[in-house]
Image (tube, rainbow, N blue to C red):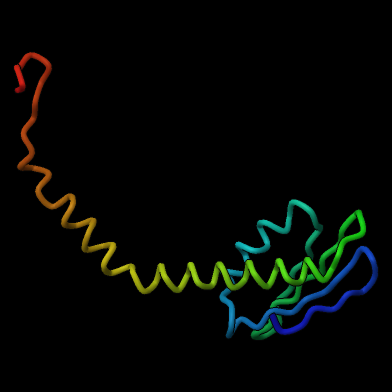
Length: 112
């Protein structure tokens, strides 16, 4: 997160650098924020700007910590997914490679 600014008890602004966090990661965090906040989003160059508005007063320090944690969590998930994509695809191919050779057991055959 590049910056987090508390405007008042109900509003805050934050900026996220897309060279650090992908738009996909930010979108996933945004999904979880929509339950408790009205979120306005804009993009300028490599910066995503969010304006959060809440009906009730919030502990903005906790919100900042939660957003930071979610950004790191989803960034790590994205990294793991990218780094394990090839091995996962190999396992899928290996698991389903011999599908034609499987024996078809019908209900009228006795299988022991």
